[in-house]
Image 1: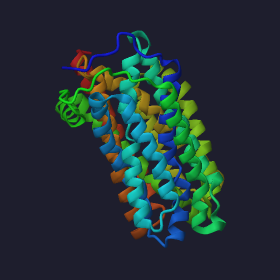
Image 2 (image 1 turned 120 degrees about the horizontal axis):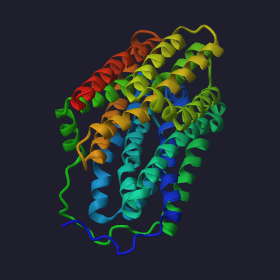
Image 3 (image 1 turned 60 degrees about the horizontal axis):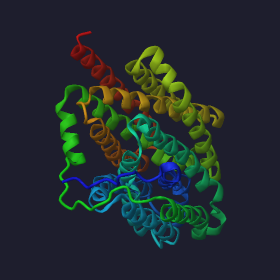
Image 4 (image 1 turned 90 degrees about the vertical axis):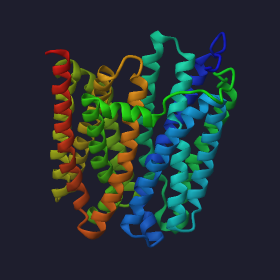
Length: 405
């Protein structure tokens, strides 16, 4: 039997901001090390493929975390899972700050990703405490927290890093991130009441892998999930080497990389908040996705070829904006194509495909950076999003045939 819910759901007025803080901190963890990657390479004398492996292992851990923590929160409650994961994330930041070598740093990043894969538990809490008419709005806030965290993470890593201090230069941004986890833990203790009254150790519910298989069996959803995988594998290849590429191409340090990523992140957040919905209303989801991915491809190729810093930053900003515009439109298409009552599970499967892609993309990028040239992963990213655009067009065509249009 499913767990009994409290007769009156917990007051979400303070709980929801705390949950958004946890999402924010999780995305800081994803982005804070990007400006530090060339720093790790020099301090630990690590090869580029080892450095990009730090990026990939975080996403691998996050993938496994999403398969674990949401289902566990159904069994033992949301609050204990949130406390475990956010407290462990704080420990992970401290461990990464004092890692003695590259392989320990890679292992710590995997563990940090695993404990940051708690978004499904957060979504479960919001579903528990939110009336149906307000659910879409509150779940939409999670996307906003993602966007802000992705902006702040690289900025924090770049601005607070101290390259002149050697290994100790890792400490300031990572310890500040640990402090934010402590604040979030206190927030959970103070303001987040349990939303599941009883444990349900034998609760049966299809897991994310079952949802992924279900999506793959549907011709529209299969193309959309494959598009997500291709798009994120390509784009994460660029992100994972951006610090190494910037250092090799323009002699950027952590501060410059953090500022560039912060600026592009602001542009992406603004485009997702304001431009994406307007474009979908005017030209539709499929056209928005295809146009966004084609623009992204052209901009990434321009970035790879750019001889000037200003053109490089402009191209990167356009690429990030184009890719970001596609994501709300993709979620909308998946919601329309998913079976009734299974939208959340199918969206989760699509997110899992994105996480898996963020493992493969950085690994390939590290190999290309080491064995080919510093521009090779950027070109790979630019070319790789074009098949994703084709898959989006095919999914839209199949969806129109299903509707008889």
